[in-house]
Length: 455
Image 1: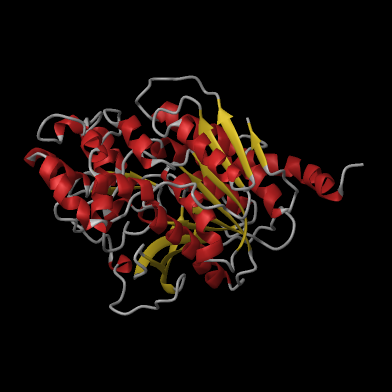
Image 2: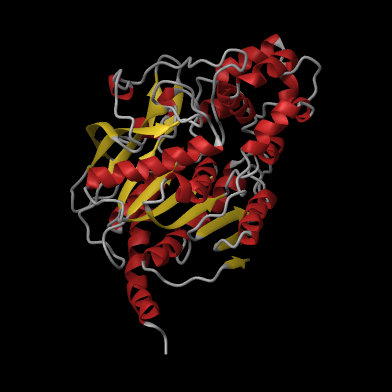
């Protein structure tokens, strides 16, 4: 006889599918611009002088000279509206709050991080109390104007001064979870929107930003650390949620984390950078280099030695751009154009012990997550390699973690262009029935799951 958990799950499944269908119908408008703004670019300052060159978006993003040092403390909020969400009990446009909260750099210094919090008046469609979903966006860029929260109201922002374009790529996921009755918090990641460098794919800071976003959400909801919690992320966001899952037990053990989606996770940065060199989003390599140099000053002398004058100028340019800008202005960038001798930049870094040590420190999979994780990856993903995502699952499983690894078999389409090969699996896996939302809902419903599964 099936257990009661399975019976309840089957009873709720038709309602869940109808809700997801509604979300997809409304959110498809938001997905279209987001396809040009997801995991393609990653911004940062010039490595020889890692300073923030972007302009403040608005006074909201500038923290006060003194703010609470407590991790996850809410510094300030500002009411906003979400026009890209479906009509809900709260009305339309959906009310939300921009949030400034406290997190930590990898050295432990307090830092202000921005994001968006969306509460829900709809009944939670799962079991137990209303949960919180923390969403970690995929790559938006490095200029402050690229932050997801900046584009949350209308779904897209344009900077007239630079003709910079940025889209809210998380509109569909935020709308889906809101209609299911969950609270949603979308973090901008450290350094996007706020002063300082966006430390793109920095393992520790990505994790801190996600975990402290959960704390801030609990504070805003007045729900406390026992609130059921799940993490949702793809590409850069998948790397961030994966890192958060494995650091949660040490950095935020009080959180009631039930499960994590790490879609197309950037677990092995060296392999990801090698894959995209010369691809549509090749400029992302420069963004990653800039971000690493901001936290590891010892890299600057090496990069300064191998980067050509034009290469340094390009790195500086990329530091203030969004992902859409990279696609339009520097498509298919090869790092051979950034170096003094015409060799790929990664080849130089591989010969530098300091650079190898830094890249190794960004590797996700060395710590066992204590809660279930779903990892999804496209076998033919042309941006974030399938092999390194699968290796993450193998590494965690070897440590005794509970991992479900699923392979998307979408065939190769226009290799090197990211949009079908990388975003296709995301759209298919995230929103089809019985996929990511169902997996995380089952975790929130405390449905039992086996230790490790691969398909």
